[in-house]
Each structure stands twice: as structure tokens, then as C-alpha cells.
Image 1 (cartoon, rainbow, N blue to C red):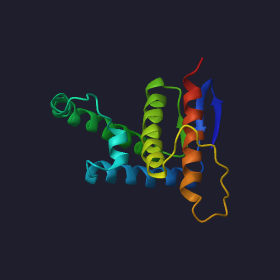
Image 2: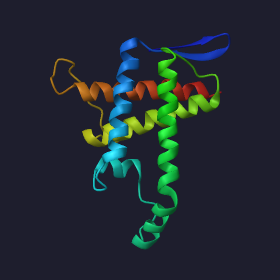
Image 3: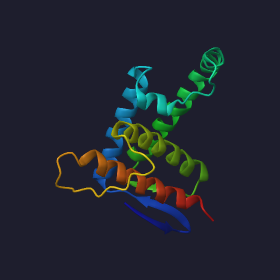
Length: 154
């Protein structure tokens, strides 16, 4: 991945393998959203409770679940369309950059929850360790999201 400016607009160039990995991660996120068990910690992290009161929470879910899911589906579809158009992402449009930040955040939340990531995690990852791959992906997603966030900063 490389973030640079092209004609005064921020551009993120991804390697083909990085774009392919994002596609796989979007597939996994969609599968989680489609078939996730309500008790699944990753799904609960993506959709945190808004109220402590069970009745208020049930009403909130009834009123917002479909629209929140639709927004998430739209973001994933738009990010997939960006990737289908090529590995160069023009982030000069704030809505595009914001969409990517939100989609990457969803990917990081789901994977980070599965890995048990906490704020205090500062681990050295041995790339030769067979269990390192998900941690390397999480670290890469973090760097990618950070790069996109910086496109919105003045």
C-alpha cells in the first residue's frame, strides 16, 4: 500500500494481493452479518447495545437494525465496486474516504474481537509463527485505516 497525492488528490495504491485480501475480508464480514449468532462476540461488537434496559434495547433494535444493516451493506458494496475498478483508490472525495474508514473499522472490529485484541496489546509478531497470519492482517488493516484517516486531516 502506498498513499500519495495525484493531481492534488490523495490516492491509495494497493497491491493486487492487498485488494484480493480486502475482498476476502469483506466476504467474511458479510457472512458474519448474514449468518451470525446474536451471541457472537464479534457481531455484538459491531452492533453494541444502546441501552441497558432490555425493553428499550429491543425497541431500539426493532427501529434501527434494518437501516444500520443496509448502511453497512451499502458501504461494503461500494468498497467492492472501488476494488473492482482497480487497485488505485481516489480518496479525494471525503465521502469515499469516510466510507473506507468505516468499512475498515468494521473489518478491524470483527477480526480484533476474534483475536481478543485490547488497547494494551503491543505485541511483537513473528511472521514465521503459523498463528501470526490473523495478527499480521489485523496490523495491516490498522495501518491501512490510519493511512485513510490521514487523508481527511487538514
